[in-house]
Structures are given as structure tokens and as C-alpha cells.
Length: 110
Image (cartoon, rainbow, N blue to C red; front, side):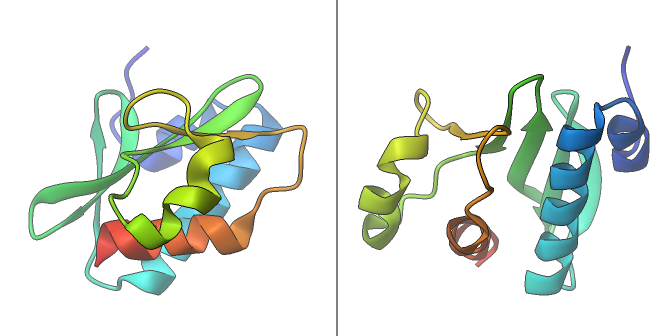
């Protein structure tokens, strides 16, 4: 089922994934006030000046952020979370590494 808004996307998630996506969304807006919310590729997407900068997704056992920032200073810290080209994967069974997530979001939204 396709959704048209991030609210609709979150409403269809299990509680654990919904909580993380809501928090990711809050942090995106805290980092960048001029961000626009859209759905692209059936995923919550955050755009700046019409350009998609961050996609997020929640799955049964993990949440993802796309794409992986090209910041060499972050590369080593992100290694445990890289799941294929362009995907960061965070297990829902572990505490969310919010400090790392914030650094990723800042890099992607810069």
C-alpha cells in the first residue's frame, strides 16, 4: 500500500519502528528548519531546495537511513552500520546510536 505522507507511513509501522522514525523526523527538523517532507520510493524523504537529502525506513527488525554520507571523518564509525552501498542499518534490538545518527543527518542535510 502506498502512502502519501510521513504521518501515514508512521501510522502503518510497528510501535518500535514508528518511535524511531518519529525521532529521526524530529531531529531532521531540529537540524534543518527549511526541510520539506515528501514520500519518494515509498519512503519518508527529507528535501532541501527540492533535492532529496535523506530517506528513512523502518522494517521489522531494523531502521535504515539512505544514503551513506561521504564524510571520511564518519566512515570508520559507520562501518558497523553499513549494509550495502548507500544504506545504513540500525537494529531495533539495540539502543539507537543517536549521536552517530545526528552526525549522519547533519552531514546529509548540510
